[in-house]
Image (tube, rainbow, N blue to C red):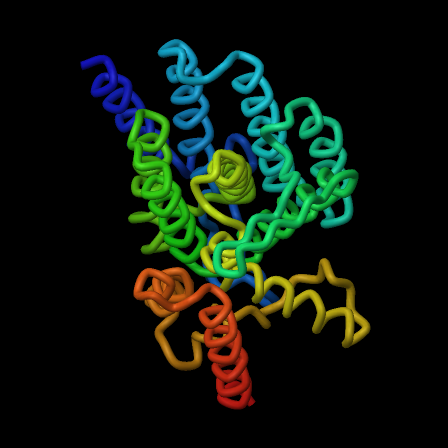
Length: 328
C-alpha cells in the first residue's frame, strides 16, 4: 500500500510539473529556444522533464534504503553522483555550458567518486561467446570512466529528436529489469518517470533537457555496472544493448575530427537526423528504436554476440551510406 501511495504522490507531482511547465521553466530559465543551425523545433519548449525524473528516482532510492535493499554507503555515492549529473544538466540548460567544461566537471567527479567503492568499477572483462576474461588491473578505473563517458555522450547525442533518447532509455531499463529478474519501487520509478515525460515529449510539449538526459544516463550506467559486477550480464552483451547510440556517437566524433572540426561541435549528422529524409520527424523514434533493439534481440535466437556485432555493424554503415546519398 505504501508503494502505491509513493507512486501516486509522484504521478500527481509529475502532472503538476507538466501542467505548469511553461511557468516553471520561464521562472527557472529552462525554456529551450529554437535556432536555425541544429534544433528541430520552431517555438520555445519547456525543458522541465528533468524536474520530473530526478526527484522521483532520488526518492525511490531513499525509499529502498529504508527497506534495507541498499547499503547507506552505496546510497550516498549513488545519490551524490546522480545529483552531480543532474545539477550539471540544470546549469547547462540555464547558461549553456561549453562541452569542455561539462566534460571536465563530469570526469573529475567520476575520478573522485568511483574509487570509493569497488562495486562501481569494472575490473574484468568477461565475454560470453569466446569464454575469455581480461583482467584490467590498474587500468580498471580509467576503463570504467571511459565507458561511462562514452555511454553518457551516446545518450546525449541521441537526444536530438522527440522520443528517441527516452525510448532508448526505456529499452535499457527493461533489459536491466529482465537481467535482474526483479521489479521493485526503484525500477517502477524509472519506468513511470520515463513514460510520463515520453508521451508529451513525442508531441513536442516538453523536453527532458540536459538535466533529464544526464539523470537517466547516470542512473542507467550505475545499473549496468551493478548488473555486470553481479554477473547478471556479460560485457559483449552490454556492447550489443548500447550498440546503436554508442557506435553512432563514435562515428560522428571521428568524422568531426577528420574534417578538422571540434569533436564537441553540434550538428545534424547523427543517424536520427539522417532518418528524417525517409521518415517523418515525429516518427523517427520508431525505426531508431527498432534498430537499437535488434542487435541484442538477435542473440536471443541463438546468434552469437560477435556475429550479431558484425551483421549490425555492416547494416549500420550500409544504411548510413544510403541515407547520406539520400541527403545529397
